[in-house]
Length: 399
Image (tube, rainbow, N blue to C red; front, side):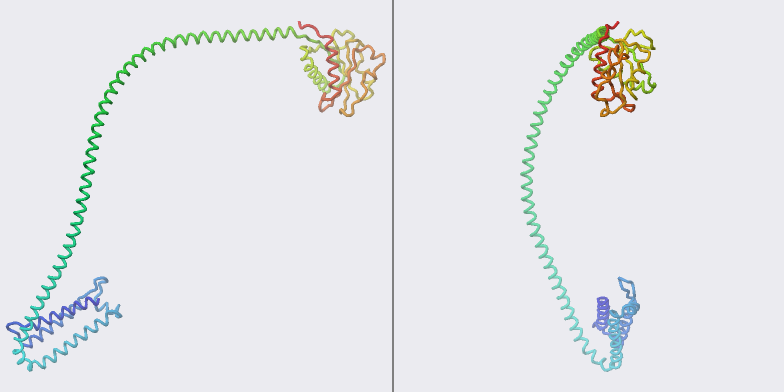
């Protein structure tokens, strides 16, 4: 803002200078005062028209909004204008006195202004000369820089030319190498083409042989499959013959069972007994064949009579043998319903010695429990072995 006021004051001073600039025919002093007044009015108009380039506010409005910075300068400008107006009034009063002196001084003032114009022109020329010298100096500096750059460019150009020359030689060598390689490649392609043609013919011949061999192989596979099928059939027949031979070579024992206990307990006892005896006799290659026995004196096979000892052993044994012949083919199996630690230490054949038991083939002790059946213990191991020995006396050839 202060820079703008300075420009306005400079404009005013120039207009004021122009109002008093001498010429060959200087106007009266009244005309000068009138022009001075017009200059003041113009200056005031310029001030009123001025607007801030940043905010667009005029000096009057800006004075109201920013009086801290603009008001002092504007007040100074008004003081200057008032002072100039006072001078104009004073000059008007002194007009008559100075009119006579003006004519004498016009020549002197004109000479002074010419001197000033000459000085100004000289100053302007000197400033132009200084500016020209500065420009020349800057251009010389630029020329020096350009010369240095040109010198560096020349060195770089020379270096690039050497590199280009080396690259050209390398490219020439590569072209030559490529040409030689192309010739070798063409020869290789021709040779490979001939080999490929030869291999195709050979492959065609091999394919024909392969087809023949494939046909022969298929025929051999068919024959081999037939042989495998026949071999499997023969192996199956051999196994069947072996089974038949083994079956015929094995012996069997037909045995009957008799018990008067309840069916559930009878099933438990006889099932466990049959399983243990079957396993024991299998090692002797003897099969156990169960025979039906409905009672009566005639017994044509070994008979195992089951006696469960629940009270006195003698009474239980007699009850079990009721209606059964006292023959050597009959074995009395006394089952003790007790835990292993509670089993009797004396065997039943030492107790059952009366006439009712003297004709029996064997009296054997065994143990069982209703929850476990014939369990593992020393009495059962010895008892099963004695039953097996008793039955092996009656083994016969399988029919």
